[in-house]
Image (tube, rainbow, N blue to C red):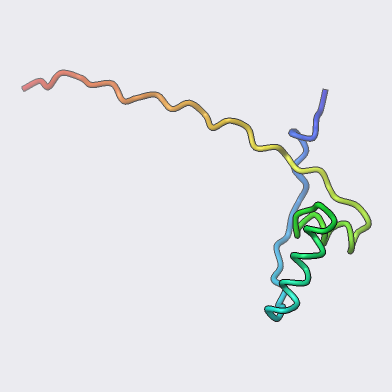
Length: 71
């Protein structure tokens, strides 16, 4: 069964130029809504917040094995 972890939407990044005052207003509006700035912008612009894949635990890395020197 597919979950939100399996869905990876195509993405495109963009820059938004704001004054410091505008940036502070945006951060406050997002915080007042209990959202991240990214989620707040998506909700405001697109009317919904798209699901995000959740970050899982980091993969376990194996320690390197010490081998005897030959020579």
